[in-house]
Length: 425
Ligand SMILES: *[C@@H]1O[C@H](CO)[C@@H](O)[C@H](O)[C@H]1NC(C)=O
Ligand SMILES: *[C@@H]1O[C@H](CO)[C@@H](O)[C@H](O)[C@H]1NC(C)=O
Ligand SMILES: *[C@@H]1O[C@H](CO)[C@@H](O)[C@H](O)[C@H]1NC(C)=O
Image (cartoon, rainbow, N blue to C red; front, side, top):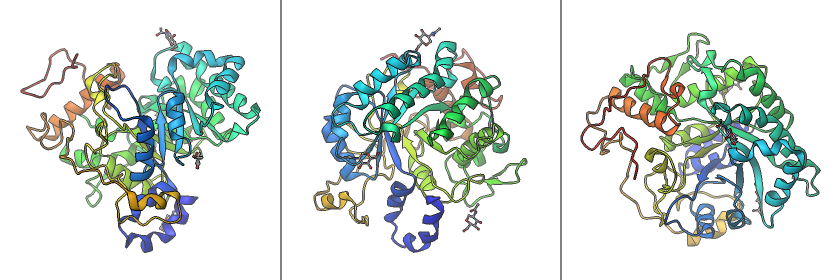
């Protein structure tokens, strides 16, 4: 709705280029995942002030419900999503535990929570206990919020999914959920989300979706460079796709529609590559071929590099900012001094806005200058990206599938400074 209203005004607004980011924040919203597993990070209060004052970000997602972080974001005007760690999800099947969780986390002084995410990618964990407790846990939390005294029913309850929850995603019109999961988990989940006006949330990494048969065309497709080129046509719908993110969102939409829930909102809960293009595109109001004329909320993964995060090294190096809050690369989220700001609290800070020093773009290994950039072939880049995805997802075979084009190998394709293997440091 809001997306189409904004579209009417778009031609007029476009003449002020800096206002584009502002459009994003008002319509779809730009969030960032704020993890704190690093040795040297700024104080939470500084981070909160920085985000509110110097960036166009208007939502943060916490990996838990840390009271110190919640306090830091109180009164900043930023929306905060908190996460129930997967380990606590089964316990929330007890209504008493759910009430206690709300009492201890949501009703904490100063907390201003807008959404609770129950677990992360539970639907792609092969853990029956966890899977079967997901929807009951969400219902219990929602009930506990509704019955609490402070009108907390406005807090949304949702959960995040990886695209591994889809059995098919190509072409987008053929998108469907994994068999068994569709009826047992996803349908009751969608019913809950619709009834509580909460979004279906996906972690989408378009670049990772490249295949070994990647051509320059499909690479352009992932990088949003195909906008003026032919793009890729979905033979099922006859619709043309200019980028991978649209294709992924429409695959999710098709899968939801197949179960009768095409009206449930989709939010990009995490994306970590080509953020600038993703932000501009999803905030533009153009929409996707199957969901035209709308904007999408999206959250970037993540705010800082996290050197203490367990698991593969790739998961630790997605940061937007260094510990001193200078940008690692230009994701287009700094509030430009010339940005036209209308009537919100940020205007008060405009005069004192600190400009972060421009930093040499670090870029990831397969971007120009990266250790795996040469040879500069789409196949080489795709192989690296696929492996990164596979490693970061815990080496499940289905995360190396990529439409039957990926294979798990024991031969290490590393060369020179380009390491495919997981760094143990
Ligand atoms: C609380 O969060 C909402 C968004 O969920 C925001 O609109 C509001 O300004 C915030 N309130 C404070 C006091 O920060
Ligand atoms: C399943 O998940 C629960 C909750 O996170 C955990 O306690 C349990 O150990 C897991 N089971 C397996 C087999 O991994
Ligand atoms: C989307 O916007 C275009 C251009 O204004 C318009 O022609 C089209 O009918 C709209 N589609 C929908 C589904 O609203």
